Length: 101
Image (cartoon, rainbow, N blue to C red; front, side, top):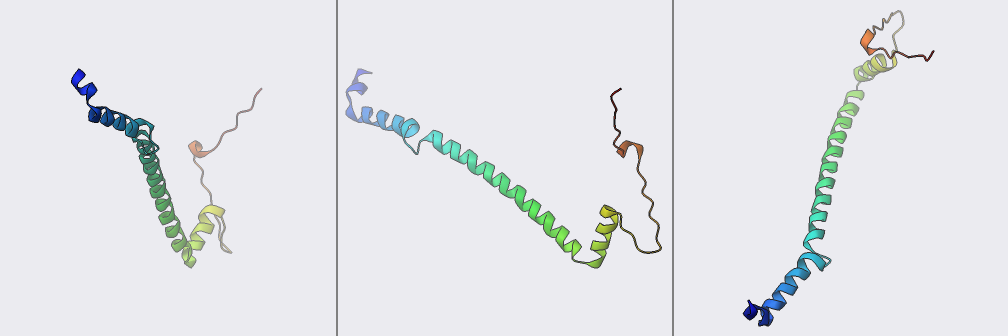
């Protein structure tokens, strides 16, 4: 063991390895953190791409007259003239308010 401690090349290699793994600005720890950040950003990118695809599909659907009419009827409860609309709400879908006594 003493033989290796006297060898200047072994000492320089150990110091260099410690420097590159822990101390340097491009150390292994920094690389691991940057890879984690890149993975998080790629996941976020995929999330936004799927949102864009969903929005493009909605835009394409609303570009037709039937799509606009469907949205107006379902979301805003609009109707044509001489037409009756009945809204059926189920008991489990109603928001019940609780009053304090």
